Image 1 (tube, one colour):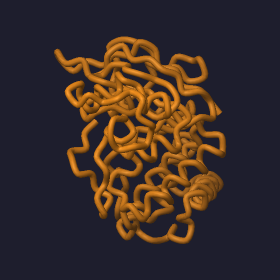
Image 2 (spheres, helix red, strand yellow; image 1 turned 45 degrees about the horizontal axis):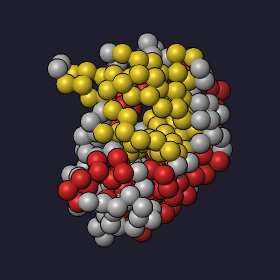
Image 3 (cartoon, rainbow, N blue to C red; image 1 turned 180 degrees about the vertical axis):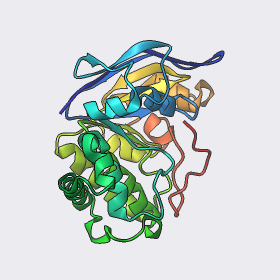
Image 4 (cartoon, helix red, strand yellow; image 1 turned 180 degrees about the horizontal axis):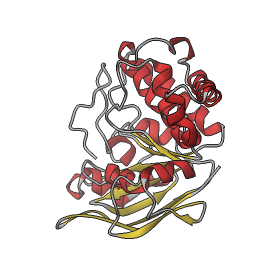
Length: 286
């Protein structure tokens, strides 16, 4: 297990500050939710944590060690993995082969040789690791089929399996339920919980507030790139600042409304409900 600490993080794109002096900690072994209105900077935050963009200020610490200057693959080798909003699968490769690609963080020294057939032992190790992750996510029986044959929910799980193949201690999940049909969502949620039970610390960005409230130990709220609130799901759902950010003060939301209702709380107003196909009824931007 590992902890993730973000301190005074800023990300600038020209004259636009997408993340503004943000700080929070994901304690080891927990699920930390990151929520915020569309455009709050959540995906930019993940890009900065995982090394895909360089912060202009602040630090990212994994178990107290500053990894802010490391490249993305170096962060992965230290135990930090992520998924993406948009699937990054290779459709013509099998499910198993897609997951094996994610093992570079733990078997990277011999991966190139493995592709050349010069390190069969490492190739077998990568295959065994990939099958282990597919078993955890319920995809082992589909390991030989092309990734293009998977339904959307299974493709989302395959993306997670590939991230797990790097043996992360901290896993960043960027909207794992986006586009997943309603009837498949509970299965994905239970798998996220199962991953956490193995000792992996999870930081979750998700637009389904029902799920966020159910699975997260703590939630941090972003607004215009900055920290707005933090605490337990119940505390965040009843925060007047959070309610105002989502609904606007003109709605006169009552701060005492019970969490989980659809009026007057962040839990009910933060994001639109999904339709029968699992698609949001408004735009779905970071």
